[in-house]
Structure formats: C-alpha cells, structure tokens
Image (cartoon, rainbow, N blue to C red):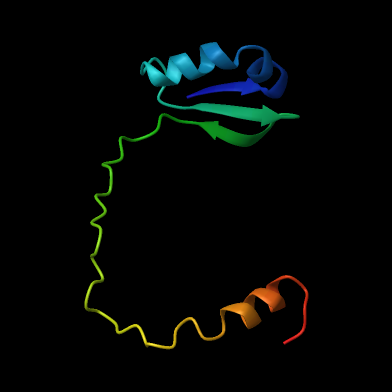
Length: 82
C-alpha cells in the first residue's frame, strides 16, 4: 500500500489515478501532516439500474380533485399567504 503526502498527491494526481486505475497500486493513501486522511481506490463496475416507465401503474389512485389546491400551494411556495 502506497502512501503519499498531500503536496505529492496534488502535483501528481493524474499519475496516482492511473496507478490505481491500471492496478499497479490497489489503493493509495493520502496523508496530511503524516496522518492518513483519504484513500484513492478504483471504482467497482456498477451495473446500470433499469427503470421501467409505468412501474407503479395501478398501485395508487389519483383523486379527481388533485389539482384543486394548485394555486394555493404555489402561493405558499412563493411566499404568499394561503
């Protein structure tokens, strides 16, 4: 495990990221005043989450008067009174 001070990390960030990205270093610890404060590690591949439009269809009922208070709510958000 490689440890670098903050000044070195700042001046060589691209190289340090490349070292971690390519697996030359599994992680790099960044220290300030000799005390570890951060860890540079590669990101794990995250599978994209598939979102389906209409996934909640039929899960709830929208009342007919849903728009009744739109003006009042807008006035409250804009600093007006009810």
